[in-house]
Image (cartoon, rainbow over the protein chains, first blue to last red):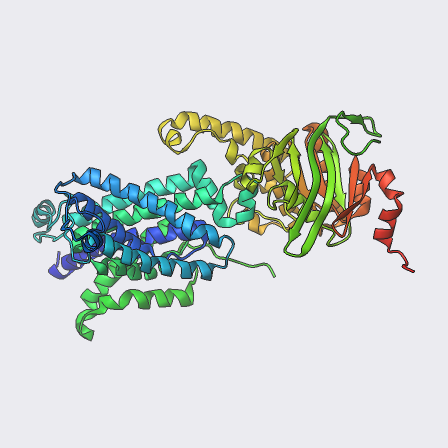
Length: 328
Length: 274
């Protein structure tokens, strides 16, 4: 096979893997949008907060150490223990559930049957609040996250492809793990929303609040459930991205990359979030590979948004979104 | 006919035996700020009867239904269900007590099929939770099958077999009303509340709906409380009628009694003030 084609294949594969990472973030958006019609601006910050909490728990950091030290003139930093990764992940997941309950109590409960724009504004407020809370609780420095996921170029794949094609593919182990995790996550979420009792209730709430109440569904329970799941998905995304590029403020900005993914896949479709992410991942890499050199590179910064814009013109509901037809 | 607080049942004109009190509303007042929507109304609903609430526009009928179904909490007064006083409850808690309802301006899950919509009516009855559904798949599947069987019976009963898989959003108005009724029935309610079940229907659709209401009362013994504008329909369907006007109760009794009540005639036909 010609070198050029093999290289394009490698780029495509890498694009698919990068796309999975976008999809992981987009998933969280879709979940909350489906269940409450709210575009959750805070999803990216949720991922950051989850990752910060995970690192903090793992390293036995004292939460609010700076505040405590300033008030009581102490010099606390860590408890002096290190938690095993799995335990820390479980605890972080518990913290995300707790956070969901608090968000429902303090914010959502008071905004029942308000216009979506109001709820959207509330999530913007929430995003900034969580960003600050994360800083105050765990400190603002860049942290390294290591929960034992394999990282670096996969030797197996390199040697295999080298034997087959005479050209070794460079594929990151972490991307492979992220892909597997995303597959499991999407499969279980789809099964959950299609076949479980709570999944049905969730879809009902998404459609009509009053009708949902009249068949005995508690809106508040469903909201806590949805935000817990979104928090869990944020934790997964936070682990993947945090392992890849460190836990820092910019983690919350990956949410911006999820937007074009959502426009492609449709805001209401779980498979859409995945396919959208893959298309953007591959498209971005291939575009940079083929057209990039002609326009001076750095196309990855804008390609996704232009693609999303085109979609808005020709297929505003996205690939898998529900087309809303109003009877006049 | 003794109207209020008749503890024991009675026999209707067409010879059906009606049971004791299922629901009782005592001195219900509902205020929104300075507006009094319902003023000191008491009445009861007996087990197995078809009870209607009628009145001109803005009389407070829908508010009354919302009080019964828990969507509004009365400012004053008490609600008794099965002789037990009901505290302030959320609508979903009321639904779980066995009180199902439909809405004046149809509230269905537009994104779901007719079948899925009706299945949601049984959500609270599904025992197997998230974990058990994942682990004991067989048991959950069996339970699903049982619920499905009940739902199919309702679908047959309401003659909507051929639209089973259709997304609800695509249905015409009359059928949507029927699907909403099916969803309420799926919960096997003790008390079924219908908010203007025939509003906006043509004569044929009205006749169908009337037949369904009579049949389901007859076959399943469901107690029904309905609101309706169409006087003719109400008088034919119901065993007893409450008449409201400007938030007050101005009449209560069998259709014949109500028809001959001077206050009711005045409210409906208007009266010359001197």
